[in-house]
Figure 1 (cartoon, rainbow, N blue to C red):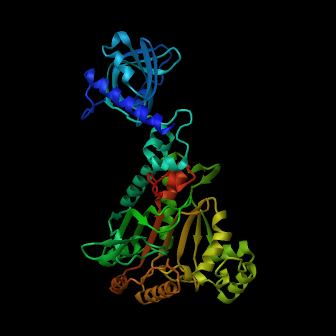
Figure 2: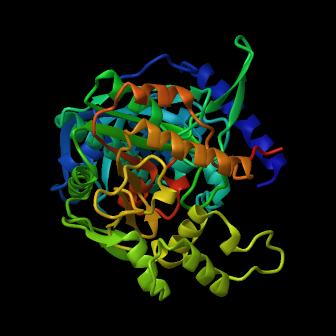
Figure 3: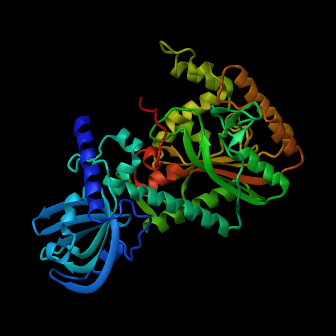
Length: 496
């Protein structure tokens, strides 16, 4: 549709609004009251048959999505937040019937009338009174082509929700996911808390932060990249079970699994280790899926996923070795670098061969190549190398590893959990190692957080910790291919 056509339509709709006002309708009413929802009516009269009529008087309000005027009768389809229903206007029943000529697609109206089912079996409201509630000054997208451009749908989510009703389902399921998790944790005795979004030292994860300047304090702060370090301060302070569900901000690219602004749950449970936390995740997510979908099995993009317990468990280094054909100890750095140098030589245009990179990046890259993309069913990846786990406690029986797991499904990491490191001396050494990597150019390594180390030196009891990505589990439950499909307003470059 050309800009000229859009302009002309807008001007005509303004004229239609003026005409409605001249006919005695209020331009923008302050409120309205209706007694029914379309879904409620569809369910209540589901057993009725063609030509059935009822004396019940109902009232609904919604957006006009279809409008067919045929002389002395008019049919319309009205959509509210629960669904759609047909309405029927008859000239000899309505004093202001002719005002319908000034109603446009997209207008929000209120109707009252009786219920009947047409000869063709369509449940319909026979209108005895109506009023416009708000005029849509812009036309809805073409009903045949819809709003199909993905980026436009994300930019104008209000239109996406308006013309693609199935989109709402994903966000309803996301909301129910969050509500379920909150109830589940509160039933276990957890308390929800809030920690700073603006932080002087961003930590708790390896990621580039966003920076902002506080004028009054004349200081640069960072948007948080993790909830971890402040929640651990609360454990030091005496809380036993805390969680936070909030937005995190990482200055990274976008992909079907990544958005720079996303929602994370983190919890800390005194007296528990990573196996206790694993059982919590396994049970909570299994019951979440069953509660929201009616089954432990769901279909995700053509693959059936089984969330019933127990989930599979695999060893981080053992699985890499098995899939890559490595026949030596993965923790032998010298041998591993030699193997990587042979199998992943430097390519043209690369600044540095994989074998020359820090050992943590080598482990992560091999995991990304050989393991994560192939994990479809809900799976726990266990016992990671210490080199990639600066906040996890050393494994009690496997030297060089830590007590950590990641739940993974459909090639996506759903979360991360540890037996939390509470030795302040060991923690300082690991922070210093991160800082040395930062000094060598790895800007995803966080700076050393001296205040957190001070808190840790007052003593943090043995604690199990967990972080879960809310957006990704919502993707699975809602069966959508991109994280942008479960974030109402994903980050986009502004249009010029």
